Length: 111
Length: 112
Image: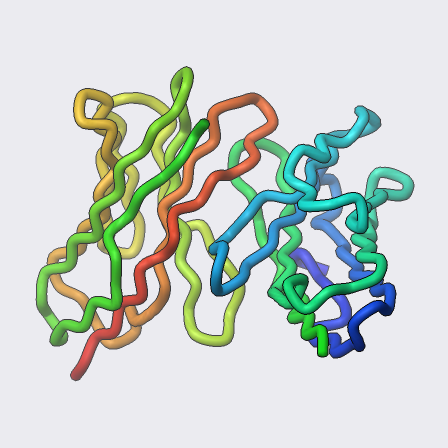
């Protein structure tokens, strides 16, 4: 596709459940980022992948959060044992340089 | 740490009015500066950027100049339209990994 795609667009889950969020970056983009947009915290960096290098996980808020990127393309963000404070819009972006292109986001609601 | 402070909103103005959204930053090194825009129901889009001091970014009638002496990157548009109603985010990146630090966002509503 022409842009970054994310799925699902909306996810409602119960507290304590695990969730997986998917990101398909723009073809050829070597860098992939995850951000979180929430009312209380604004836009926060979570994790960054660049090629085959070890990811920069410095923005992950707790060890319940993890992410992987398979084959240098698709990425999955996993949140284990979800809490209500995890409710937010999770944004994925990809780039080949300084300009990041964002996907539409996944809105996660934890009940 | 690196941070961005931008003007609190919301901002409401009439069509053809002048818009300014202030943005200042704190960073180690020499950051690249960005304005992103989020239109209602849409994802984040890059509006403009500047990568070194005194550079001016421009797009869609918007402009912002990278001012190192005042650590600022204020966004301006001379005559806004209803279609400019959106949330505007100032952001910076300071390292080769380009991860972004965002301001809190400013909601702008333009009335006909």
